[in-house]
Amino acid sequence: MKLVIQRVSRASIKVNGILKGAIDRGLVVLVGFGQNDFETSIEPVVRKILKLRIFADSKDKMNLSLIDVSGGLMVISQFTLYANTQRGNRPDFLAASNPDRARHLFDRFIEICQNLYFGTIIAGDFGKHMLVEIHNDGPVTIIMDY
Image 1 (cartoon, helix red, strand yellow):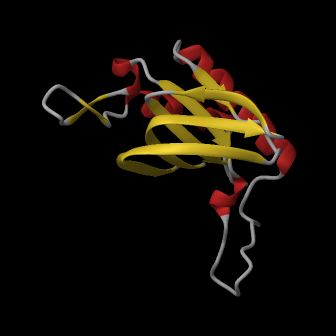
Image 2: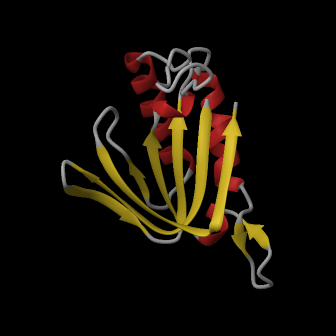
């Protein structure tokens, strides 16, 4: 599982030109699933995301988590995180999970987020073309590879 986590001041997602959802202060998580990923890995990763201390406290030190600031959480499936650019100019995605399995893992990822976090959660539409607007705050971007 590969993730890109961005701290945002706001973010929104449109599918087919229609606004699906938006968040203010919070996190946008782009998540890709590989061929060797298992459902059992998801819960520890979600717990880690929710507890990442990447929001500023009163002393402007990154010391608060998404839970602490009651921020929004936007999760988007992104198989392109598994792009292999070693050869040629066209990336291959051979290490990415097949779409059916990835859809199952993404749905499970969202379900676990909903079970562990009671703030606003917006999920992208798996396999659809989306327009994601991200206002990266900082910028703060964390890359996780599990």
